[in-house]
Length: 439
Image 1 (cartoon, rainbow, N blue to C red):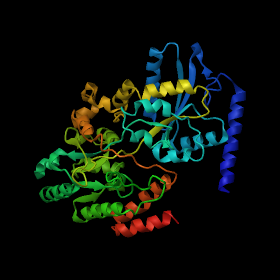
Image 2: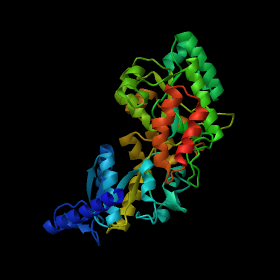
Image 3: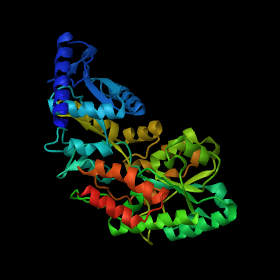
Image 4: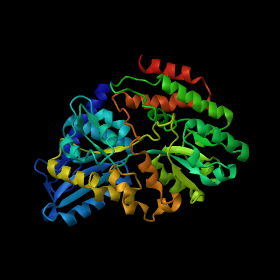
């Protein structure tokens, strides 16, 4: 039945695409630019772009404007559309399976990417474009979109996980964030914060992946291994969650209101200065600037504590790749434009200026533009990229494999609630989940 429904969806999409093509040859299409690239007014080549994030659409539209100013003989008419997350990924999958209706360029979220790597990828191999830039970028941010040594997508950001500290609470407790080098130091500092202020040092998600995945990635562990095998109950994973659960039992840590760090309940809780810290990826900055206004000027960004002296102090988390589909009729131009937007120095500067992300080119992290006043430097200070530079070589790649989406959902919806909310034995929880996922 499930296969029949998928096939029916493919057939419907194919019929709709044919009908739309019959109706007019001049209107904007829902698919790629055609066999030789679509010619728009003024001889521009049309490139169709799909995304599920409105800010990403605006970024690419601005980059198309810049491209056209700098490339008068290679004009682009970018037809960009923002489609709801699940709808877009489903529509893309059906278009690629049917062989018609796919865009030239498309954003694919990290956890969905394995769905497009099954069998022979129907995305364009970007290896020749990416390889010359490998020394300039954080390589893990293209490796997660690779298969058999070939690269198929380029991320917007590194997603470096950092510790966000409430300086005001730490000062009240007599704690210096720069003295916290290891997780053992963090726990001791947390006990001091709790004793002096009555507030927890940190919050953990009761229904999410962000209080688990960065912490095990720091220790070069993962939820699946490089071969795609499920590894949720690896010894280091079990010990990590036992340590975090113990902090909850001690009161040093609390479960985030709303069970997650991206909920209105949590935003209100933090805005009242209720916890001293949280570790989340770099892109979480805009949650503070946009949803937690009271803490402006009170928060500082520092590396995550290491699990041992000399250990990794960050982890690259989350992400969205931009890829080119094999249905594009203007692959060469799409590649040039994608490199311009995602791999060039100017493109990476614009990613910071427009989106507030940590760009994958680390050479821009030292650019003076990174310290210029904007809503992020006004909120956190102008040393944000100093912190990132200190950990740029400590961001190990994560494994995104075919089994990953199923594992992510199981960890988020089963393991984390049991460990942090129900306070069940982490070893038993993870052993049970391992057995379930490998049955």
